[in-house]
Image (cartoon, protein in one colour):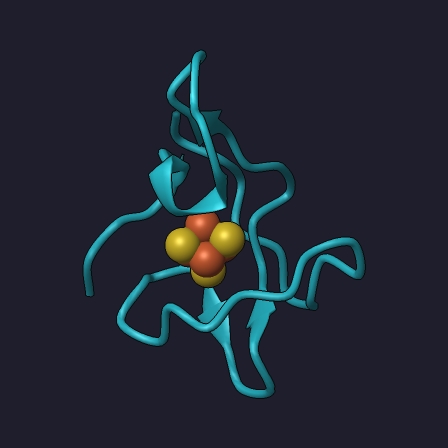
Amino acid sequence: MKAKKMDHPNQGITCEVSNCQYYMTGDNCSAEKIQVTPRHANNSGETDCATFIAQ
Ligand code: SF4
């Protein structure tokens, strides 16, 4: 899911994926919204951010 990139952090998200185009210093995400997949996960390790775009 492509999301609008904002010029400030999304206060509702903390993210450590520093090689994502949406990543901002301080473990912030500048995406207006994110999508998390898959639909049926058994634990947090099985979930992924589908909005991620590699730098
Ligand atoms: S889009 Fe996803 S992976 Fe990228 S910085 Fe935001 S939360 Fe992290």
